[in-house]
Image (cartoon, rainbow, N blue to C red; front, side, top):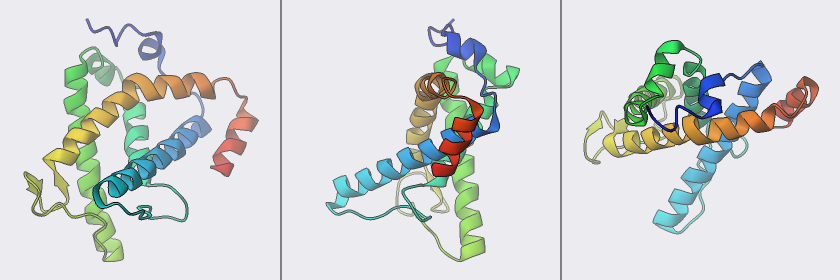
Amino acid sequence: TSVFYHSAFIQRLHFRFLPDLACHDRRISGVGWLWEVGLFIFNYGVFVNRGTLYGPWLPIYGTGCTLIIIATQFKTFRKILKKPFLTFFVVMIGCTVIEYLTSWYIEIVNGVRYWDYTGIFCNINGRVCLESAIFFGIGGSICVYFIAPFLERLIQKFDNKKKIAACIIL
């Protein structure tokens, strides 16, 4: 079995309170914003606010990672966690579906396309591509095996009132 599965976190993973998940979502949305802004600065040399909301958040990152964490609560997914390579592919496919549906929804509702992978190798209708799918698989796996355990340990140190206050502030 995998060394990852033997961590105490994987064996007992559970966010006990809705604000735990909400705080996790906001933090990862912020990390997603930092990632996208950093990539844009690296590729084009200029700062561009990649957020879709007021503030430094990209909800697709937080939502995707939070859904992955929720999935870890189910026995079927826990079996997959024993094999990091399989976890990578399941997370990659799940996040790619989320990205595709989000792109489609935003375009239908707002008439705007926030990203377009047309011209990038192995894209589907410009909404998703192999490159982003691989990055989401890696990021989601990092979330499951490293970020979520760290956040759970951190979040469990606070009582529920402080958790709710942190969620409101974020």
